[in-house]
Image (cartoon, rainbow, N blue to C red; front, side, top):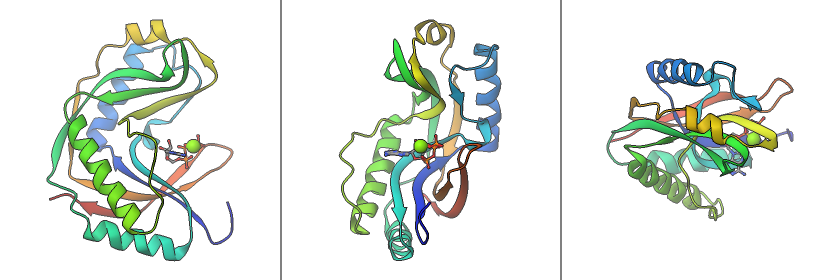
Length: 185
Ligand code: ATP
Ligand code: MG
């Protein structure tokens, strides 16, 4: 970490119920554990916009922009089928996608992006792919059979706010600190 800078991102937090239900179902689908470096369930989240290392003034600007943003009405997400980036045969990231609610997550990411740009951040040029990261795999592995054995998780979750987080990178993995939440609707 560079002194004076905060590593920020905006995300959808899981509800406690959804976190537990997802953890149960992932464990049931992969009783031997996930390949790679699993993200501990308390850290599971869905990133809408990664902001990177930000000075205090940038943080203030993004807080103000998110306060002003039209984030739309609350909605429901159904966590569905697992998948892998860049592809199952050479997976670097194992994730869970959203079945129902993916379109709403895209709108929410677009509103977040608009707020970030109005706060002076550069455009995100990568397309938004809503996903919840379960594990990071280095070197890449073939997870085709694991994915085939993992049914859609079918966990339903309300989304009624987004959260600005500060990430602290450490040897034992990242930890996330909630800075502020912004209600939908
Ligand atoms: P670690 O980096 O130790 O594996 P992490 O990726 O969870 O942990 P961060 O790197 O601080 O922690 O990332 C915070 C969130 O932002 C994560 O959801 C991560 O996937 C996402 N993220 C990080 N870098 C980028 C990036 N360049 N573009 C888009 N999202 C990113
Ligand atoms: Mg990272």
